[in-house]
Length: 299
Ligand SMILES: [Zn+2]
Ligand SMILES: [Zn+2]
Image (cartoon, rainbow, N blue to C red; front, side, top):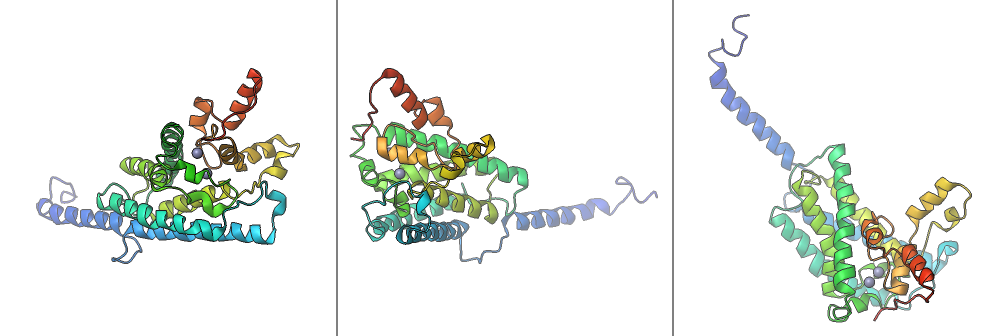
């Protein structure tokens, strides 16, 4: 027994150094190892998944438009812009802005870096952080910059507002400045923040889930479909609550009125539009109280 105590072993101090370095090496390998080939940076892999999700969902909604398969849920007539008129600008933004921006933040070591696996708690914290962060960044850029009357045309947000949120693929039909402020920043800035606190890291599951959910949300809000309409007529309060979460009405109200719902809607925390009372249902109440008709057609 005398040889088993930490202070009684002569060989232990000499063995400890290689042992510790071995543990560190294995920890480092666990931190960085994932299943991607060496030539494929994580940011590029995430972008590819994002593209598959975005264009897969876009084609599915386009199929619904052309076949009328879910016509009971189509709330608005389909946009006058066709799928192929919208597609080139969407692809330009995704290839020449989003892809380099994602590669840049990885190269700087600010995102897509860190542990290859994060725990469940960090997974949830990261998603909630991304949701709230997206809400805040998008509200600031959309409500206070892009919709500022003097900047509306200068930054080209009017381009996006030539669509009526009734053609899914039009979610990324916007000017370069608009795409940077409304798509790239609200995704990447919160991602940098959650990475800094130990979430996201290089975990493929986290990144793939985040971009797939984000792509679906954006496309759904611009699809003209609202899958909540039947739930909303239910007598069950819980189902009506779920309908509120599933609804795509907020962004269609934004396209229709221009002065409401800058970042609330499907998949949003709705914090900013609630605080600043620009949520579509709150503005309607305010306007009714004042006894004047709804304004807010965009400039
Ligand atoms: Zn829109
Ligand atoms: Zn807008």
